[in-house]
Length: 156
Image 1 (cartoon, rainbow, N blue to C red):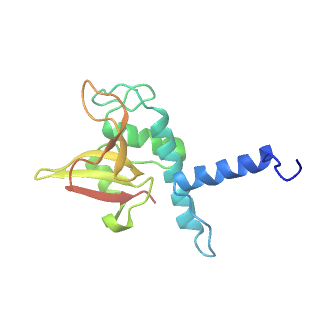
Image 2 (cartoon, rainbow, N blue to C red):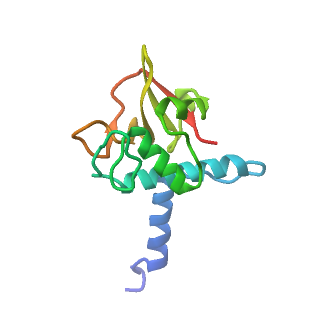
């Protein structure tokens, strides 16, 4: 009977922690990578904060904590994670490090572009999805990116 030991609570917790880290795209620290790791952890925290607002109603001009517009959700989430952002999606785009799609990571901002410029923003959740506050009558939710007309920005 001793050959079929049940896993200890500690080993189950360790496996769960590893899965959690993998799910949020945690960064392994390397020498000299502290600034990147700090930015990554802030972005991951902001993503978790945005996700915690799931179901909160959209309201134009709202910056939380119970109602949000798109840039209000990103502003609120990053502020709670320790970084300040300007108010509008276009201003937020101008204040981020612009990165190519191939370099996007969980927690980066996704900016939606039309001929008029930036019109929407969300937080990249991985697998082609974002957390965002979409529009009047909708709620904060996880949704697949619906267009290729996007740009990516990293909060420093």
